Image (cartoon, rainbow, N blue to C red):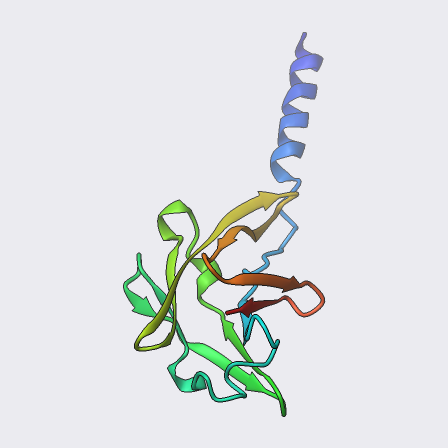
Length: 147
């Protein structure tokens, strides 16, 4: 009986310590997007429809505007929101894509914190935006929003 008890305690100890030497943490992916005309496919910032400095993401739950990183090449503008993925859980899902003061698109972006195999990472649960076609390009982690 006593050897069996020690064997069980030993197994419990091994299970508790299997993650002791594992150091891994993956921050959430940024929300990267490009604004395109749904009919022509033209970049809506490059063609002058919207100004890059007016485009923003606003968190309803946090009541704050996110800082966006904007990058460009000769024909396209790309926006990166590095804050949105950290706001996890169903209570932090409502946002607005503000294209200018009069053009606002509400959307849902929900992430969750996942712990698996000793590691923590973030997972996108859902992304919904009414009346906007969304195309995800996984090689670039980029959403093309066709307005």
